[in-house]
Amino acid sequence: MARSLPLRAALLSLSLLVGFLLVWQVAVSGTGKTQAMDPEYAALMGQAATTGKSAMPGPMDVGATIWKHLKDPFYDRGPNDKGLGIQLAYSIGRVALGYLLAVVVAIPVGFLIGMSPLMGRALDPFIQLLKPVSPLAWMPLALYTIKDSGLSAIFVIFICSLWPMLINTAFGVSGTRKEWLNVARTLEVGPIRRAFTVILPAAAPTILTGMRISIGIAWLVIVAAEMLVGGTGIGYFVWNEWNNLSINNVIVSILVIGLVGMILDQLLARAQRLVTFPE
Image (cartoon, rainbow, N blue to C red; front, side, top):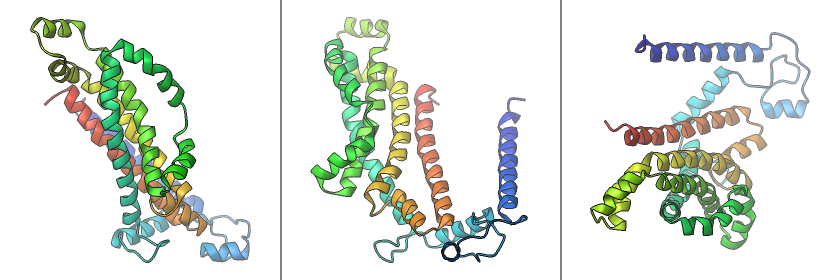
């Protein structure tokens, strides 16, 4: 019974997907009359103003758009006309840089806070003050000081990724079992070696939980940040396609953003399972 659960869940998911697509197709198929659209808007949408067909594209239209992007994802026809693959690469690159910078800062500082109650109390007011600030609130300051939209977006990713990792690292380090630490002290294990051989393995699942939370937040924030600064990236692509009234491309972008976010989350979830339950 337990072995059949994943198969049953997959079949149920597939059934729900098929049902959703059928309802979507019926809803936009124009079975009933709709209000006439403004002729200029209808022309931009590629539909006749007098037709009863919905302005919202159906799954077949979206599928055709996906295929078009898959055939040539890396085309470059100028500043405002780049392929979906290029835009996605810009976003992933910015997230990777900002996220890795956050890892370099958050984990050592989290170790320091977790191992030293004095440093924990001293830094806590600053963490509590800065943690609730929306990452996008930093964007104007970043643009003013850095004067580069791409680097500013990386800085915003760094800020939003920092806090979950730092707090989870400090929590995991401070929660290391005292018995293990006492044994290490009895064996005269030095602080640095103790941190790597005792504390890090014990805190690793909690640290990876923070990293997993951070990557999800980072991917959410990069889309909003690129909408603000423009230029390149999947967020800019969504906003530019909306300005062009290309709802097909907006829907495709939403699907791509969700798919990439799921992949990033599952990669860290896999790492977390390996640490928690080594094979």
